[in-house]
Length: 295
Image 1 (tube, rainbow, N blue to C red):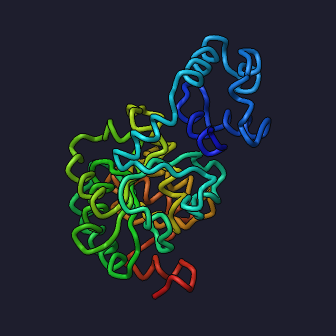
Image 2: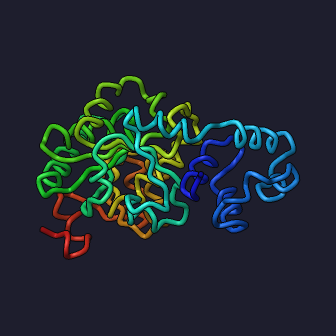
C-alpha cells in the first residue's frame, strides 16, 4: 500500500511531470490517491501536457514498480528525502520552489547543519581566484562552516577540496543522477564526499545531465545556504544565476572583487555594483550573518 510519500516519489520518476505539475496535482488531491485512476484527458488538463506526453506520463505511472525501486535504492545506500519528511532541510523548504524529492548519499546529518555557506565561481579560475579562496574559505571552515557547492570544475571543485583537506564538512549538489556523475573528472572526489560528507541531487539516479538541470541545481545550492560567496565569474555566467537566486530567496550574496582588466571578474564586480557585499576577508562575511553565527 502506497502512502502519500511513496506516491510523490512515484510521480517524481514519471516523464512529463514538472515541478509545477506536481503543484497542480497536490492542489487537486493532497493525498495523491486519485492519480492512478486519471484519464488521459484529466492528465492533459491538470498537467497541461500534449496528448503524446500525457501518454508517456501514464505509461510510467502504471509501469514503474516503485516499491521494488525503493528497495534497490536502499541496497545502493541512496536515501530519498521528500518534502514531507522530517529530514528535509528547513532552510531549503523556505524557498519558492523547493525540490519535491532529494536523493542523497553520505552523512544525512549535514542536512541540518545551521552554519552553511555556498561557494560558486568560474570553471576556469585564475591563480588569483584560488588564492582568494584559501584566504576566505579556510578560516570559515575553521569556524565550523559547512561548505556547499555544485561539483563543477574550477571554483566548485576547489571549494569541496578545501573543506575535505582542512577538516571541514562539505555538501555537493549535482545536476544529474548518481549513475551519471558530471564531470567525470570528479569521480574520485565524489567517492570521498560520499564516505564522510554528503552529495545531493533532485534527479533520480538514472537521470543523465541536461543543460537546463544546472540552473535548477543552483537554486538548491543557494537555498540551503545562509549566504553565497562568488569568487570569480564572467558576465552572464551560471554563478551569477546562483547569486540572483540567492537574492530572490532573501539570502546574503558576497562577491570577491577582481581586476577590471580580467573577464573572470566582470561578473563579481558587477554584483558589487548592484549591492553585493564586497569581501576582503572572512570577517566581512561573518559580520553580515546573524549574531548567533558570529563565533
